[in-house]
Image: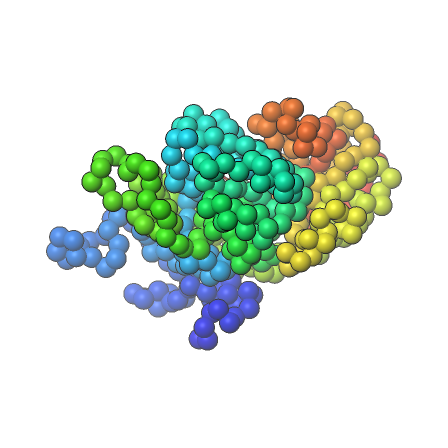
Length: 404
Ligand SMILES: Cc1ncc(COP(=O)(O)O)c(C=O)c1O
């Protein structure tokens, strides 16, 4: 096979990192449901000792993810938040993190309600404001973390600019690429050090797995100020080695059954994303003209303030959008309870269309004042447009909008 670096994305999702099973020739990667591996003599094994450390099914998934995102390595975790937590564990008491102010509510909760108690310090800011970003950087700033487009306001942030400033400062830059998937956006090519995914969403794509990953552009790191645990401990030197150490040491990795499902889901990532994007563009254009809708936020619309940047930075606009209804909380509730084809549920990125109320559902863990400041109001609705027929989706929304 030709070098996979030269292959198109549609080919890579089928083939990259995936070889017939060396033992049996099985074309599909087997589920290696084993916790341990026989050794021929103490310390002599075939590369696998214990499945917390390494598992062949997970290893194939990690290899494929690294190729799809253009990274050197990938690591899979039990959830998106477990992968985020692994990154936080690179840092020590007193270290400072700058995060985007418009983040998935669970990421905000992990930062503000968990990591803060371990001694990390956070500033949540609008990273589109370069002056504010530069003013917020401190000597202790070690990490810059953001999503683009943001969740749920769909603001587009300039990955090249933000990661360039972070690098100048010596801070790591992590992009949560969940909304776009590697089909539409490649943050590592634009200068990020790590891409994080909730693979629960588009990468698996079938709403039947919770899993996360980190894809890493490897580089040497400075040694930590104090070593963990004991002074003789030699901390791993590179970013990947440290995260791999943490994955094994903490133990929140993905299991082989789920890894198999994600490997299967990835095979249709390209065709799914293409259809998500096409459907979302139709639905957004329909909603933008609808008399019961105040405003639609979708980066594919020319009216979106980030449309120009999105057109350079992304290869498409994805399947996520939000819109403000012309109505109050009661009317918004009625609308959300009336849709039939759209399922009222948290999460996103599956083949089926989902709809939700960020203020009450996904972003309830963001304090009300911050929600208001960002724009998460009572009439804001978030939609994950699935791959059904777009006419059926628009008809369902139209029927429910009639109740507003
Ligand atoms: C953008 C984004 N990042 C991270 C997460 C967390 O991922 P998980 O639910 O897999 O832990 C989510 C979950 O909704 C998300 O939407």
